[in-house]
Structure formats: C-alpha cells, structure tokens
Image 1 (cartoon, rainbow, N blue to C red):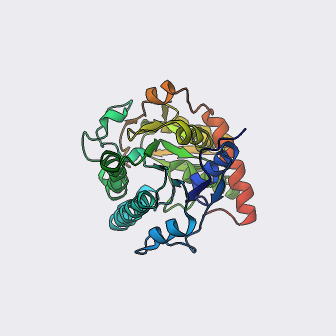
Image 2 (image 1 turned 120 degrees about the vertical axis):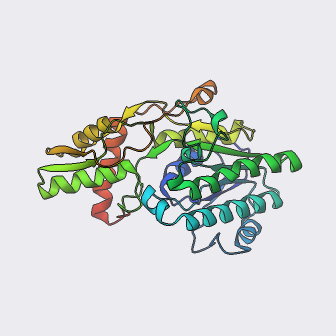
Length: 317
C-alpha cells in the first residue's frame, strides 16, 4: 500500500535533470495526485506567479526542484543572474507554500554552498565556516539562504520544511552543453565526439590529482520519498556516495565506458582547483540510507542514455 500522507503533491522542476529521476520515485511511493507545471504555465521569476500557482493547484505537499543551474564557466560569467534568479524563485515559492497551508515542503541546495576551504570529508556542521568558492558564489549563497528560510519559518510559524544537499550529481537527463555542463557530462560528450572523429588524443585540464565525490542521480532520487515521509527537521543532510575518486581515475573510467582508444594528455598549465572535496555521509547512513551505484555502472548508464537521446534530439547540447 502506497503512502497516503498527501493528497496532492506539487513538483516544480519535474522536467529537469534531477526531476526526471525523482518524480518516478515519488509516484511509486505516494498514493497522491501529482501536479508538475512547466515554466510556460508558471514563470516563477515573475512577481505574484508563485502565489498564483499555489492558489491554483492547492497542494498539501511541495517538492521544489526548479532552479537556475549550470557549470562553472556560466556561473563565473553570470553571477548576478544566478544569484537573483535562485534567491527570488526560492524565497517566493517557499513563502507562497507556507501561506497556502502546505503540510510539507522539500527542496535542495548544492554541495558548492559549503565553504571553499571546508575540510573533507565535509560534514553538515561546516556549512557556515566561510564563503563558498568565488567562481559560483552567486548561485551557492542564494541556495544557502534556503537553510535560513527553513529555520526561520519553522521557528516562527512551525512550517515543516526540509533542505537536502546532494553531492556532485550525474546521470541521465544531465546538461551536456559544454558552456554549462559539469565535469562528467562534459567529459562523456568530449570523449564520444573524439572517438567518432578518430582523434588520437584528448586534452584534460590540470594534473588529474584532485579528488571528488560523485553520486548517481538515481541513488539520490531513491532517498527522497523517505525524507518526505519521515524527516521533519530544518537540519540539512548530505546525500552522496561518500567515495573518493581522483579526476585522473574518472577520466580513465569515462574513456573506458565511451570506447575512446586515444591518449589522455594532461595540460598541467591549467589550475587543478580544490584538491579534495568529499562529503561526509554519516548522517545519511545513520538514517538507513545510502547511495551505492558504482561509478562505472552509473557512467555507463549515462553514456548509453546520451547516445540514445542524441539520436532522438532530446539531449541538451
């Protein structure tokens, strides 16, 4: 028997990258009506539109995933856009949900909101120990304000909201536009195109020594019904694999799953960035949850999806 805690669940961003993974998990877990509006129906950046959306739909639960997101290059070039759009959208949707009498509100922020000098493994208690990395500070500080809003509305109004922190998420439906993509989709696309063009080598930036913690989107999605049903706190939770992998190992694994047979040339004149960024998933595991898909398996699924979606013209390039 599916969970009947909610009658109507509003899901913003259901048609985006993470939404494609989360929505099926929610539908499998909850016996409720799901409403998944598009931006054409409700442009959440327009004044008054979030409140109108809540009045029209009248949900008792909101899962808010709509966001302006992109890779490091786009964040560096347009920090004001990333700051304003996310701050305005989140603040308005959150407040409108409270005023509409929503029973439960669940949303997400990024691991990039942690301080630039956070010590790995990065626990939730390090969130306020400094400024995030400057390259994406517009986006990451705007998202970080969700923690304050969640705390403030719970303290003053008893509003039940949850803010989760996925790690470096990858998987099907990701953005493969090289100006906006994160490292894994960018790498998959470059290696496939190099293979198809018969190039003898691929250039990768830096030394390959930095380490990261990547989490498959399907694993993140599987945890969300549990948080919606059982977690009633404004204390954030990291959702990641908690596994350390070097960028060099990542590059070799992507090379393997994409079938590129050339050489990887490391351009060490390019900066490495933060050398070690791993998320502490102790709290996640204490709840009986984990993200265990092996990296190679997740990369293979993502690569297969990219090839098929490119054929159908359904991938963001």
